[in-house]
Amino acid sequence: MKKIFLTLILLLTVFSAYFFLNPPIENKVIESPERDSIVSVNISVVGDLMCHSTQYNYAYVKNDSFNFNPVYNYLRDYFLSPDLMIGNFETVIAKRDGNYKGYPYFNSPVNFLTSLKKNGFDVLFTANNHSLDQNEKGVLRTLNAFSENNLFSFGTYNSKSEKEKIKTINVNGIKLAFAAYSYGTNGVHIPNGKEYLINLINLENIKNDLKKIKSANPDIIIVYYHTGLEYSRDISKKHKALMDSTFYFGADIVLASHPHVILPVEKRELVNSKLNIGFAAHSLGNFISNQRWRYSDAGVILNFQLSKDLRNNKILLNDLSYIPTWVFKGKVNNKKEYVILPSEMALNKGLPNYITANDSLLMYESYFDTKEIVNKLDKSVKLLSVMDSSNNLKTYSKVITKQFQSEYK
Image 1 (cartoon, rainbow, N blue to C red):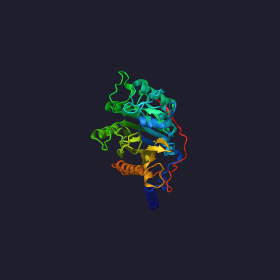
Image 2: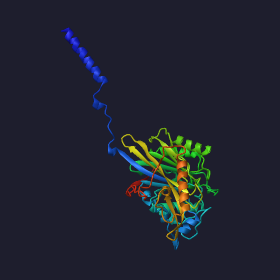
Image 3: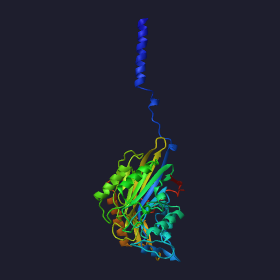
Image 4: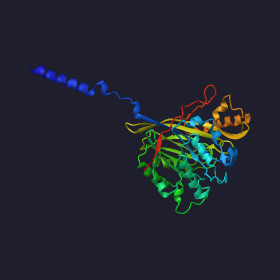
């Protein structure tokens, strides 16, 4: 009897050990995310949006009215597809009195801004070296025009209290925070006591700003800098140090422009972030301007998707890609126009009939220049094709209704 009892105890011990070491299979299964637990936002970014005098002269219609919409004809459908379309607004809005100016002190028609809104832009950075071209009144006029056209601006402010607000944008359940800074104002004096008019690059201030922004618990912090050596295609040690410091302070994504040429894009490891990996775009270059020389007549549309798992608040960076562009200047149907074209068109037949052989050569050159420089530091940034087999622009998606709101805290 005792032997039987000991045998039963031994069997129970063996079975217990087996199940302890080998739990039922169903306990090992990792559930796949439910569709409703994942939300995403698609973002596209371009560089400098400039308005030289030749541009508004070409866009003139009559009676102080200008039509800049043809500039975006070939990319309009694409611009309307992302949840957020972002760029650097490198000019100032003028009064409706015809006192318009180009370089060196910009003063542009309001139609330049309204065309950006009509063609899909949502967020524009306003901290750059031309922000104070028309002094304080120009800053205030520009911000007022942004408000009237339901556009978000970051980098210039109409009051100290407005500057100190933590302004975020909630898109599809993902909370985005922005900050923008300029290296200077081309020597234009900022009125004493009104330093709030523009954010200037100052490491201590940036550190404090990002600390304050983090207190609002955004999902992503995007910082924009207007900085760098004009027309240089190299990243300086000073520029790299600024980028390194910004990521250390808590930024997830850092964008930049000012050199008027494109610089590389590179992914960056992040610490204490919800995002799995960030990136730096060292210069997005020009997107529209009258700068007609090599490298400055080329632009880029940088695209990326952020996907958030609502169950753990982790965010993934998906599909970091770019589209090379080139600016045409000339006659279209007997009317002088500027038109931004995807430079990939130069590789295919079926170019617009107003493109000359020389135009095609310049577009072809800019396409390969852009490919070379964007991927110089990071080969994983994808080149996005915008042409289908019939040489027409792809239809990326139906125009979506953008559902987002600004949150002020």
